[in-house]
Image (cartoon, rainbow, N blue to C red; front, side, top):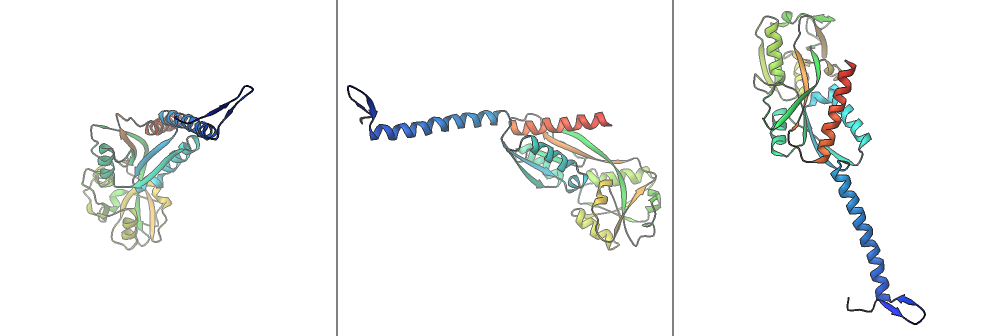
Length: 259
């Protein structure tokens, strides 16, 4: 060190002021090194870190998103979760590019080959009608009784998400629907329905979204479901993300056993 650290006499050895200062710093350095090593080990085990999760709005209404996040945080509270509401095609691209770690989407959708998609929920479709609609007071309706109505869907291609669900369900009921695909999101669609612009086929869980002027009516003659799926990279290297993937698999296995 170039400085006296010890003061030696015949009877004892003492630290010099310089030696004492070095000793105090050395204790701090060793403690910090131990803490850093412990933090790195926790990171490697997937106990800390950060996960960015995308979701479509209807995933929040279903309860799946909140249940999964809540139970995950109870087990691994030191992992930071960042939530971003995104249209599902944007989610798929961002996950593929590594800008997003995990996503909740509503198939059908074109899944890039680098990603895995697993269905975690299947829901029946219901009709969202204006309270002024002639059939709004019914407990249930036949989808074919709505064929004269204008069906509102999100801004999606015909083979994607709720647009595809609507075409499939109406086709099963024996007619081709008139489509207005200008719904930016479910709030916009519900508002359009409330003022009488059209109707929509939505997940049953949407009945928790109680916008004034909208009523949700069950369908008697429809077997088409709307699915909720989780999407993530096949070759994931982030231990925290892998911990969330494993958690989601565990939840799905529990659900399958209950079913």
